[in-house]
Length: 265
Image (cartoon, rainbow, N blue to C red; front, side, top):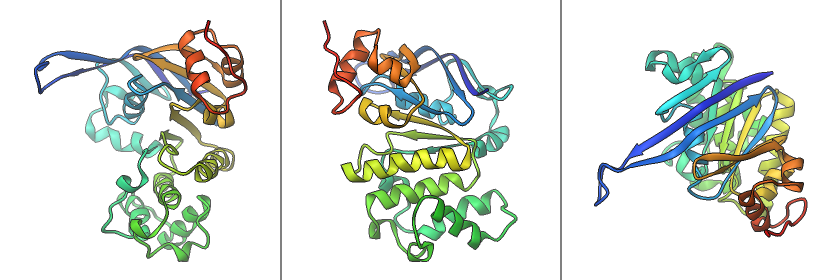
C-alpha cells in the first residue's frame, strides 16, 4: 500500500548571484516516485543528480515548482505553514553530517527532549528519552544523556540525531547520505540500525545515497536519478543485476561491492 507518492515533480532554482544571475536551474524534472508502507526505498545518483533536492522536497524544506507530494490522500505540497506541523511529525529527516545536525552547546538529553516538549508529549519524558536511546542502540542511555556532541563519536552522533527524529513517532524516515561521513565499520552499524528500525517500528525509510554497494545491502526497491530525472527503477536486486540504463551501469562499476560488476559497452 502506498504511503507517499511523488507525482510529476519539478523543482527549479533561480540563480541570484554571479554572472549567471537570473538563470534558472532545473534540479528535478517531472519525477515520479512511490514509497510503500514498511518499505526501505533507495534513491541513488551521483553528485548533482537531484537526490538531496528530492529529500528536502519530501520533508517540505523546499516547495516544488510543479507536481504533487501526496501523503495518504492529501497533496501536502500545497499546505500552508499552519498545516505543515502535523505532516512533519509523520516524516522526519536524518542529514548527512551528524555533527552539523546537532547544536554543540546542548547535550544529548536536550536534543531528544526538545521535540517531545514541542509536540506536547503526554507520557514520562525521561522514560521516553531512555526508550529512544535504546532503540538506536545507545546503551545504557544514562551514559549519554549529559554528553555534548564533541564528546561522542561520529556514529554515536548520528544515532542521537536518529533518536531525535524518531521522537515524533514518524511514519517515514528520510535518510540523506547518513553514512557517507562515517568510517567503514560505523557505516555497517548504521545500515543495520536502519534495517532494525524498519522491522521493529514498522516505519518506511527512504535511503538516499550515491553508493550502490550500500543500497544493495538494505533496500527493497530503488530509483536511479540522473540530471534530475528517474532513469531506472525496480527491485534492488533486479536493477543491480540487470541494469537497463548506461548511467546505472556506471554507478554499479563505481561501487566497491555490488552484487556483480557490469561493464559498460
